[in-house]
Length: 444
Image 1 (cartoon, rainbow, N blue to C red):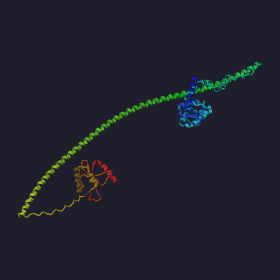
Image 2 (image 1 turned 90 degrees about the vertical axis):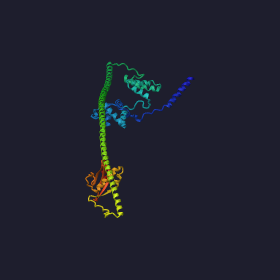
Image 3 (image 1 turned 45 degrees about the vertical axis):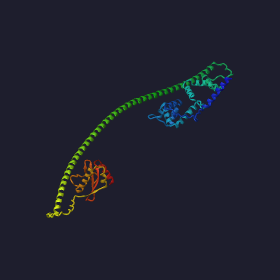
């Protein structure tokens, strides 16, 4: 009873596994196969095994495939299979023509209605690889536990026996009587032997043809392998050469980079030296200007003291004259003349017109530069051709001029259409002249 329970439990577990295992899908209609999923060599060898040389030639011609440097009729079978494999991988929709050739030549694959597991697929392919494929298939059918399955092997075995041993004698049939005429028996035996000889010769020719086909395929495979090896060696040599060239280029790039870095450092040092020299010149100029200004300041102070002394003398004389006049002792004095009339303006004098741009440009400069700018503007109004001004025209702007105010400071002015005026435009740094010219051209 315990054995019965165990047996029932095993059956239940088997049914549970059957329910848990999802059903495997059946083959697609027309036995379609996604051949484009294979790599090039795998697909090529499948076509080589499944199709006859004439079939591959017809497919190459029907698909209008070609290999550069070869005519279609001059291509070997391996080359044709490679072309078909490349075409199917590039255009998967064209596999229908190849599958139609397979159905025409082989009708259908084995076990079309039986879904295969991966293990069963491996077993099936492995069994077909050897010369004992027929014996392995018959053994599997004869070992099946189902009598109906085993019975399917008998007609096939009978056909094999008739093929290899000749037709079997029917049961219950009377044995043929011995021939009365030995010559007739010998003739029949000779005819039978001739038929068997012809059959053997035909089979020999077929075997030789198959052997020749196998030999040609082997030679083509060797040629293809040799071509692959040659190509692989050429690619390897090219890769080695390219690697060596890349290493040389990398080393050259490193040397060029080091050289450029050295040049950059040298340029930076040169720029630093030039900047230091410029700063030293600017410092010397500043010191010279400071010395000149100090001298002018000292002279101005001396002049101030002289004027103060003269003013004191004049005040003293005025007080003495006032006192004498009150006492009536003043001799006939000269009556001061009325204020003199303004002197006549020279012909070179021009009325200065200070623009808003000029006043805006004064911001940011120190008082010394501002004072010098107004002084130069006044000198321009007094005599714009004065030798100390050294006015230079601005290139590209007719009527525009510049005069020096300080070392790097320039005063810009313009002669207007009214010939008796001069327009004071701007006070700018010398380095901004080009930018000012571009902006003035844009405004005009």
